[in-house]
Each structure stands twice: as structure tokens, then as C-alpha cells.
Length: 149
Image (tube, rainbow, N blue to C red):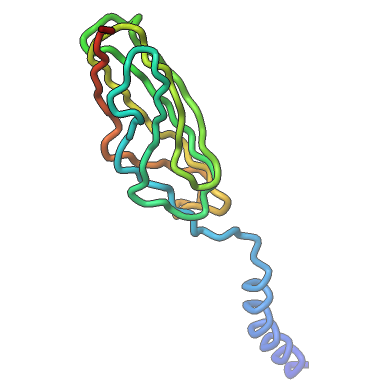
């Protein structure tokens, strides 16, 4: 009887770690959120009413994420809140986020500020969450719109 118990205990000591290590339900923790270096507008010197394309340029693309959300604000330098234009969007498939806006018909200096938000991953980030945060080193760009000649 002691021999059977000893054999069973030995079997369990060998089999349990093998069984549990191969049957893990934990998803991988390999996602890395992107980081961005700057906000780039095209054209860089827009005129009144132009449609401008904005791109957040990667510093590091990250890994295993699939969606990033962001918010942006276009404001006229030292002017009332009525010159603020706000928007939000999202980008899919580990690409540099791109969006457009129309330049106001009022001359002046404008600042476009972009704030990256939640990053969603297909696996888990190092903290064990499917959601993370991106970083953006220079989150604004300033440009001047001249009056029509």
C-alpha cells in the first residue's frame, strides 16, 4: 500500500507541472503600445479653407496592438473659444494615425494639438491589460493662415 501511494505521489509530482504548463489559458503578454515623435500637417502652410491632412509620425511602432484612439483641438492663438475646433478619431492596424480638417476662413496663428488615448491590443500589455496608452513627444504644431490677397 505504501508503495502504491509513493508511486501515485511520484506520478503526480511529475505529471502535474507538465499538465498545467501546457494547458494554460493565459494569453501572451507581448503587446507594446506605439510611441509617436510629432504631429505633421500637409500642406505645412495651408490657406483659408484648405483641407489639411494630419499624420502622427511613429517614433516606435510598438507590437501586437490593433487600434488607437485620439482627440485633437485646433485653436486660434490668443482668441476666444469660438475659434476652437475639436475632433476625435481612431486608427486601425498598427498604422500611423491620419485624419483631415478644414482650415478656418479667419486669418491668424493656429495651434493643432493631438492627444493619443487608449491603445487596444490583440494580446496583453506588460501590465496584463488589453488596453494601454501611447506617448507623443511633440503633440502640437503651429501654423499661420494669411488673409486672402
